[in-house]
Amino acid sequence: MAADGDLSELWAAFSRGEGAARDQLLALYYDEFRRIARGVLNGDRGRMHLQPTDLVHEASI
Image 1: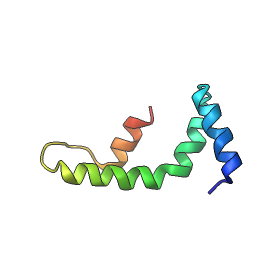
Image 2: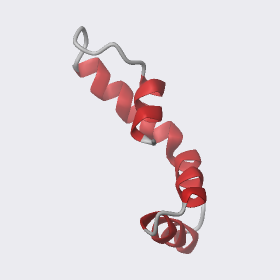
Image 3: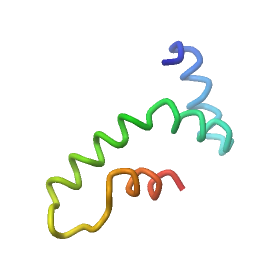
Image 4: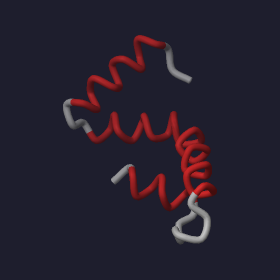
């Protein structure tokens, strides 16, 4: 995981719309996003036809 200062810089760059920062943040948080997506999808079993990975990819576009 990146240092706090590095993360702050990445989030600031992301908020300015820098695609490279988005990509770096996604790489850093990808496992966490998948864990959250899995929890959301498990609670909605039967109504959604997405895999956690698909949900993370859709949310990151």
